Image 1 (cartoon, rainbow over the protein chains, first blue to last red):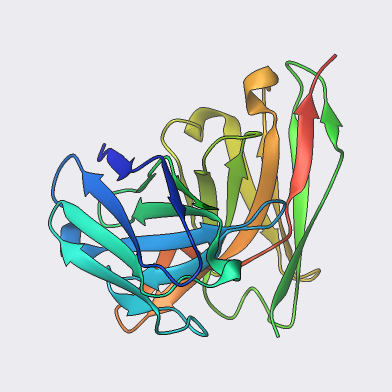
Image 2 (cartoon, each protein chain N blue to C red; image 1 turned 180 degrees about the vertical axis):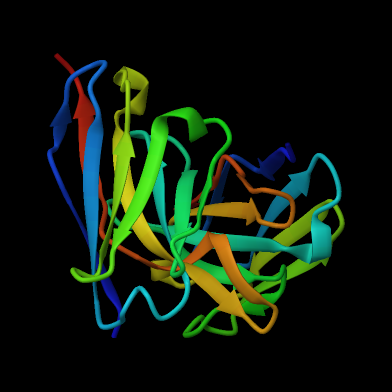
Length: 107
Length: 124
């Protein structure tokens, strides 16, 4: 099983700042089949990124994904108030697994 | 516009079977896509339970496979989850969702459209 480790556990930033979230896999993720989700309290997750770097429908271009192999990054270039949430990475190349999440909170 | 809605009892007794249904509107589930179940214990992360393809084939999380059955009722445009021998560790918000599709094909365990989720508590 591929274990995904997200860091940091909590990230405290202000609106307008840049956020960089990390997802590290215990072994290489096949075909860069890595996704990112955003989840707000009381809501279902929302797919943001698939294939490591492709934005899902309706996702603004201030949100981007990058990486390959074992190291992946989600970047939000200029934080808006609605971006403060929990973010999960998920690999779907070899079976599946989720990371434990990063909470992005307002500083 | 595709929408999914979970329904079922919010309480299950230990050792019994948890049963939930996901009703899909705006799309016929026998046309295409995987349709899946994911759960999230309170305050914790996400866990994929399993998915059913429009053809009726299923894929399950190996850690839950011995207790899970997912089935579809095309006439009612819904699919269902049964989880047997539940314990307190199965207390969670249960989501149904549509499996993702890209140019490479259909995926059983990445999801782009989700229901709102339903909390199931396992307690005597």
